[in-house]
Image 1 (tube, each protein chain N blue to C red):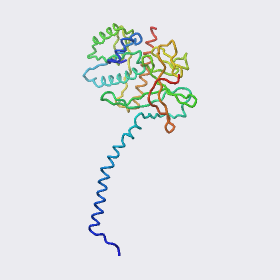
Image 2: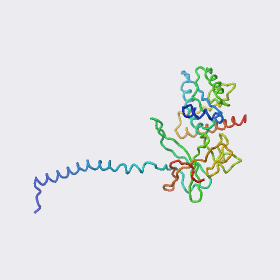
Image 3: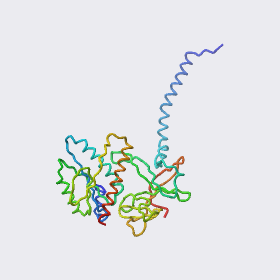
Image 4: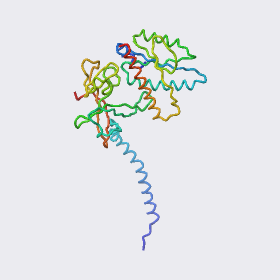
Length: 144
Length: 166
């Protein structure tokens, strides 16, 4: 499910089945690291699109949360909002190193995608997606 | 004695020649425009050719990818989807991988305990090989089917429709 009108309408009735929210989380700092941040963001987008296709019925992908200078207040507030809405699990999909009390993080590998041709890029992203899928399934199995 | 072409005859012939070119130049495009709807219909509802040979399809369902252009408001993009394709006697059957519960992607033999069923990892939904949903699991209906054909020995995939083999 995505954060759009149609899906949110379904989500309201199916919150029992769609029990996991996934928050893409990246940095938007405009400094020397800006290009790396942009690559991170691009990769997170590609991974979430694939992930949504596979787990549409159980995973709710929220709009990406951004951080500036490592601030996480907005994200923390958002996590508690998601829990209040009824999600049993909240997963943070990120390249960054932060830990949260009530949400589990899935940390992606950094891949230098900008120098690759499309096919290579696709296959590396697909590997990463499989990796993330495994982690999501293991999170689902943890408390069941 | 060779017959001499008079100035009047020469002008007549060349005028007729040029005139017929001009007439053809006007009438041919008009004729093509008039016939165009006939050609158009064939292009609609066309089947998408995949890169999998029909003879390679066995009774074990395999993933067959196909790409098509999708229009999303003013943004057009190429989308790759896939179908589960297997052979049932002479017939080739293609099932949609979209779970009828909440739309996850189902896998063939994804659950070790059920090697001959489609399995949905989200809520442990299950389908028989013909797409029939297994009672007692979350899905509310059978998997959709795709129109299938062959073109030059390759599998082609067409429109999606509700399951008809059950």
